[in-house]
Length: 205
Ligand SMILES: N[C@@H](CCC(=O)N[C@@H](CS)C(=O)NCC(=O)O)C(=O)O
Image (tube, rainbow, N blue to C red):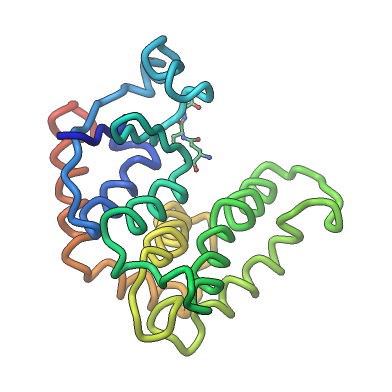
């Protein structure tokens, strides 16, 4: 198997399994116990100086950052899940894929930790503006691209799924309906089964 994912079921790498399942890509899972600090060991640090999961190795290439990994998998292995570079829909696809880690995640973290930041300087603005923008991405639509599912839904929807499951955002119907729709996907369910099996195998629950 050419691909290796440094993985733990209690990490963002669990979401990467969904991306792999959607892309139909086989990948060796290198379990890295973040509870024991294995992510800071020499093997992973050599590949990802952040010492974080997920880290994907594909031949000679290392890809880090969950969103980048998902978009990479679509571009390289499942182009049907990404608008072509020449398609203007690519703008929408990239917009909400980048919005997840660069706006949703820090806005939620800033609110949870009472981190005082200047709204004009912080790239994520305010929590309220983040929620309104996220809502605008999917209001009246099935998916980020309208009727067409894409890898942007794995990234953007996967982030909302996590925030809802861990009660980090309010369960507004626009978000819960969208996430419920995503959870029906066979690839999502296969990934969740694998994550669950791995948690059991590692004695976690
Ligand atoms: N920006 C990274 C964040 C990765 C990240 O923070 N991963 C966590 C697990 S979800 C981690 O590896 N934590 C262990 C550590 O920082 O030592 C991404 O989006 O993939």
